Amino acid sequence: MSIRRFASTAMLLLATACEAEEPAALRVAGGDPARGHAVILASGCGACHVIPGVRGADSWVGPPLTEWARRGYVGGRLPNAPDNLIAWLRDPEAISPGSAMPAVGLSEAEARDAAAYLFTLGAARLPPVPAGMQLGPNEGGPRESPRIRPRA
Image 1 (cartoon, rainbow, N blue to C red):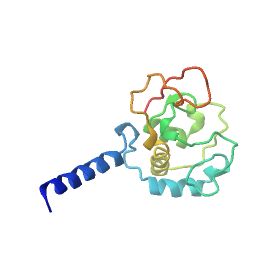
Image 2 (cartoon, rainbow, N blue to C red; image 1 turned 45 degrees about the vertical axis):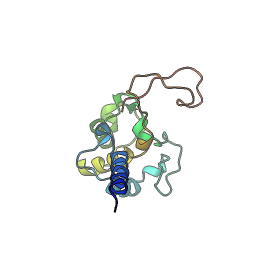
Image 3 (cartoon, rainbow, N blue to C red; image 1 turned 120 degrees about the vertical axis):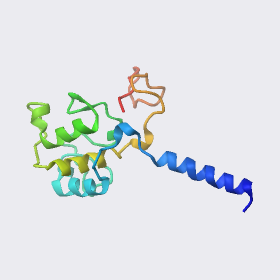
Image 4 (cartoon, rainbow, N blue to C red; image 1 turned 60 degrees about the vertical axis):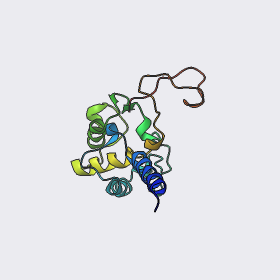
């Protein structure tokens, strides 16, 4: 193998590895997205939410959980961060009194895994600019007025 071909292959592998790594702000320590998928399915989250990749999760009772990693808030009260989402999944009423979201009895580990799955949704499309910057044209959905980029 020539030096040039080896270098090209190495660069391609490095670029692929960099793209696959999720942003540090979205990593859920100790969480496993595959187990989280199973927790979400078993807990019946799809009875109220649209959740990409979860069979039967196509209800509009609660908000859709599409592009979760791009969301700014958890329960309309806390910044969207792994620890806040875990707390919300375990006891939504403690975060947002009067919320329609029920506590489904998730353990710490189950909530951590479910959060790890949710943070995979939309993570590949995170904007390349920091939170707080105005979204550019066609980045903010159908609203005409400028919107602020959510915190990652």
